Structures are given as structure tokens and as C-alpha cells.
Image 1 (tube, rainbow, N blue to C red):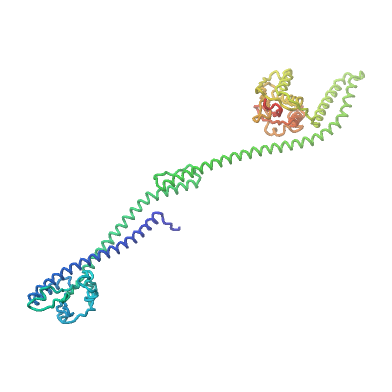
Image 2: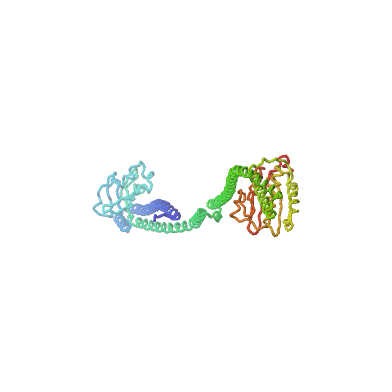
Amino acid sequence: MQFRPSLITKLTFATSLILIGFMGLLDYINLKNFRNVMIEYAVANADQVAEIISQSTYDAMMKNDKASLYQMIGRIARSNDIEHIRLIDREGRVAFSSVAEEEAGTVVGKSAEMCAMCHKTHNPRVDTSTMNRSRIYRTADGKEVLGLTKAIYNQPGCSTGACHFHRSDHRVLGVMDIAISIKNLQQKSHEYRMQFIVMTCVLLVLIGVLITFLTRRLVNRPVKRLMRHAALVASGDLKARVAATSRDELGELSEAVNRMTESLGKASEELREWADSLEQKVEERSREIQQMEAQLQRSERLAALGNLVAGIAHEINNPLTGVLLYASILNTDKRLEAALKPDMERIISETRRCADIVKQLLEFSREAVPRKESFSIETVLEKVMDLFHQLPGFHTITVNKRYDRGLPQIYADPNQIQQVFVNLFINAGHAMPDGGNLSIIASRSGDGAFVRTEIADTGCGIPEENLQRIFDPFFTTKADGTGLGLSISYGIVENNGGRIEVESVVGKGTTFIITLPVNGENTGA
């Protein structure tokens, strides 16, 4: 598993590096300033010691008491912090040294370190400050010391004293060289540096803890909420929202993410609705295509069958006419025995029945061109109902009629449409031998271009497997049926620019729906 540092770790590490860099720089500057301050303090102390010795030297020289002067300087030189004290006269000869007596009488040149600091200026008393007269160097044994050189000036009493004589034009009578150990200074600097490092480490730890806490609270938590929200959105939950707990940039980012998620939800919903509607439209279009294909196949079958039926009907019709003619002549012949007369009447009846079938076949094959005109659908329906009210089989059937007001006239062949309704009413009567309800509903289609007529019975219904075949020629479930009535009705409706459909449930009834075009001149009626 690959290591992936967290945001808190990165921020804490980066901040710690920056703080360590700044603290290191601050430590360097602070320690340098502390060392300079301590050196200035040590130089000031050494200058005070030199001033005391200088005054003591003046008093002792005025009394010509060198022994007490050297004794006093020796006691001061025995201090822990003082390495050595030297008195050097005007000619550079060492008059007194607290380190070794053999140094007395030796000559120090102007190029020596203790003399060069003053002699490199034109006016040492004026131009050389106390700090410029101090130096840090290492002794022969490797000790680091602070050296201070102080000039002993010619005072008025020195040139007029009785003990000895100094010329009045000599400004400097000699110098005093004091070396002070800076071991304590180094120790103090080290202690101060260690204290500063410890304080820096403690401060870094506190700052790291504080940064971690604040980063976790102000940055890490909102970022984790955004990550969880992104995971939910990626999994498909577009109703998830991020709680905006602050008004800073992360809060604004949370609100922007919420707006983005809401927009994604709306877009997804629109795409889903569009996909559903598209699927529904595809299904509807597929059904329409299937219906069109079925109608086309039915029309092709009817056309082919019509040609075949027309030839057969013509071939049968001529001999059948002869049979009927001669049977009628024999039936009226007195020479026919009485016992044979019923059989002859049966032959005539069956021959006439065959003639009727041939007639229907011829009507089916001819598909007569409709003579279209404008008429009211209510008029045709009422004419057909008046005809069937006279039939005994319709006395037990209750007719329910409902016609919409203001129905426009249809444009078709009224005689052919009447034939269709007669055929449908006959089928409805056969489906309800023991009585029932016949509903007739006429209404205008939604687009106003057609009149829709529904003829529904409460008969036995049509099985599902027969619904797709009821308009096929010669398909019938009746023992004495020819199977041509619905086929002829289908062809008539199609030729008149309409459409016929059927819906049926076994045991509940059957509904035929006939849709016929409205006369274009009165579509606004």
C-alpha cells in the first residue's frame, strides 16, 4: 500500500520547517546580539577597572610610591576574570606586568596589537572609542580573552611634580593593557543559547499542536465532508448535501458543491424523464409499426385471396345457377313424387345458401370503390338500430347510447358504413344469446380529425389467441359462419380512410372501435 501523507501532516511539516528556519535565524541574531551586549558589558567593566588603576597610578606617582602602586595592581590582577595587567611607558617599555617579572623592561613596538588600535588614528584620545580600544584574541595557551588598552595622559601635576619631570608637550605618558577572560561570557552565552533552543522546541511543539488542532477543525473536517459528499455523488446519491459550517472559502466551496449537486440532480432527473419518454415513444412507435406491418400483411393476404376467390366464385357461380334453375323447375313439375318434394326443397335451400356465399365472395373480391359523401354518424347508427329493434333476438338486449354533442359529419360511403355497423350488431347479438347490454358511444378524437364510434357488448368475449385472426378471411368460430363478415368490414373501413380495432376480455365482452375521418369542410363544427 502506497503511503499517502494527510493534509494535516503536510501543513504541520511545512509550517514546522518554516518555523525552524525562522527560529534558527532568530537564534543566530539573538545570540549575536547577546554576545555583543555581554562584550560591551565586559569592556565597560574593564574600562572601569582601568580608570581606577589610572587614578591610583596618578596618586602613587605624585607620591613617588611605585611599590604600593605595583602591589595594588597585582592584587587587582589576581582577580578570577583578569588574565594580566601591564603598564607600558611612552617609549613602549613594559614598566609593570602582573604575569611575569621578566617582562619588565622589555620594549613593545607600535605595531603590536595593543598599540596598533590607537596609533592607527591621528588623535587617539578623541577618535578611539572604548570599543575600538578593546579586542578579543587567544593567548599562547589557547585561552580566549578580551583585551583593553587605555592611555595614561599627561596631567598638569605630572609635569610640575617635585619627584620627577615630564615635559608638558607630551600628551600620553604611557598605556595600560588589561586582559580579561571571557570564559564566563562564553558559558553564559552557551546557557542562554540552550535556554533559547529549549524554548524554541517547546514553542515549536505548542505551535505544531495548535496548528494541527486548528487545521483539523478548520480545514481537515470540511475537506473530509467534501470528500464524503463526492463519494456519495459518485455512488449516485444526488440528494446528498454538504453542511456549510463556516463563512470562509471552504464554506463558499461547500455551497458551490451543493449548487453543483442540485444542478446534477435536476439534469439527471431530466435525462431520466427524457429516457423514459423516449422509451415510451419507441414502444408506441414499435407498436404502430407492428400494427402497420400486420395491416400491410393482412391487406396483401386479402388482395391475393380476393383474386383467388374471384376466380373460384365465377367458376362456381355458373354451375350453381344451373343447379338452382333446374332444381326449381323440378320442384314445380307435377310429375315429381310427393315423397321427393321435401328433398328437392332442401336442395333449393342449400343451393341458394351457396349462392349467397358466392355473392359474399364476389363482394369481398371486388372491394367496390366507396362513394364518399358527408353524413352524420348518428343518422346511420339510428337507422341500423331501428332495423334491429324489429328482430326477435334483440328484445332481450338493452341498448345504451351516448353521443357527444356537436359531432361533426364524417366523410365516407354511408351505405358501406351502414353495412359495417349491421355486421357488428349481428355479431354482438350472437355473442349475447341470453341478453345483455349493448353500448354505443360516439365521440370526437383528441385531434378533432376523426369521429370515434365504440360498440361494446357484454357477451362471452374473444380468446386472446383469436384476437389477431378475427379479421382474416374465412376465420370463424360459428358452425354456420363463413368468416367473411369482419374481413369485408375491415376492408370497407380501410377503403374509407378509417381504422377498425377490437378489444375483448373472455367472460366480460368485446368492444369494436371504428374511427372515421371528419369532413374537411366542417372540422370546426
